[in-house]
Image 1 (cartoon, rainbow, N blue to C red):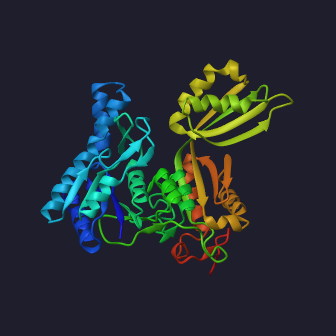
Image 2 (spheres, helix red, strand yellow; image 1 turned 180 degrees about the vertical axis):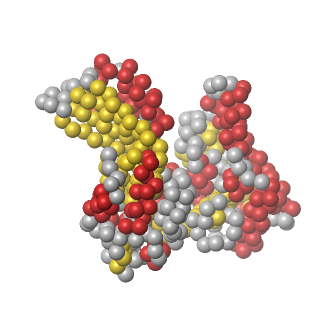
Image 3 (cartoon, rainbow, N blue to C red; image 1 turned 30 degrees about the vertical axis):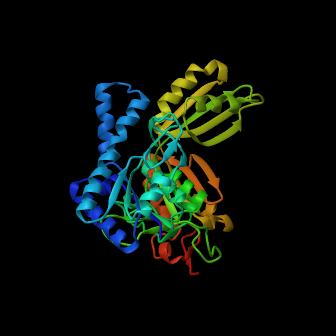
Length: 422
């Protein structure tokens, strides 16, 4: 049975935790045979290396920075190889390039183009545990790259796909995927199963258990994912497959909160023809990601355009749009920070009416003003004041029945929060 495991930085933060993970890997080896294990850097090592680079250079060159940041994972695999050999487990440690991970030359945010798995196969056939440094790869020009946030998750899924593994196990300091962030919603409950599409939405909307890139890759290649804690043997959450039993299954799976949202509104953009192309083309060139977009007529020959974006990009967006006011031809720019996005997600929403009505009724009854709305087949997102976001999440979590056993048992809450048994 082919298995790929991945252990995050929190699972490797101290020598004691490294030894704990070594025991887990040794047990898996004795039960299932050779396996591939992807490791992140220990604890906050990546942040510490980044801070070190900035002490030396105010703007470190991207290729040198990637080379530096890649060393964190190398430390992890080297220490783990030592620990496993002490336990009588044959192990070999490979950096990303040695494991055949080929990437684009986009330093700091490279994409995996291919995995040349011959070396991995050879070591597995030789009965070894193969330890692979996550978060990194190599370009066609043999330059070291890093994959950006969530890179080790992506590494693990890519290797699982290339090796046709039965599953990819992601171990971290949380014991699975919850109906919401327990720090935001104390009544949040762990889920036993989430579909790829639900996990993608939750990941994009603020859930940090898995990075969206890893989930996208798993869905594309049909790799089942299992998320659990490395600190004990509690059951985790399975991710994969399609929604089942929607006639009797849950409608809403989870509530996500993103507390770093801002809004920009351009008033009276003229002429309206081509306005969106000019505006969003300019933002794309500046690598400013835009989320929700709302347009409305502003008189006979003008257009109002509002969009949400990451709060950290607000100042840069204002400066850019102010500098290009003449070419964009707008009357006024309004900007608002201090916002958050609260989203309800569930595959069952695609076949059940009334979810949007339930969301708006719940928030209106609580006096929470909705500033923007975005929907898909399995998601409804609303932008609200940041100070109201956590309260909104808790109210929606309760309204859709996620506070009780329905979160795991599959009961179906109505938009009013009443649960109907399957």
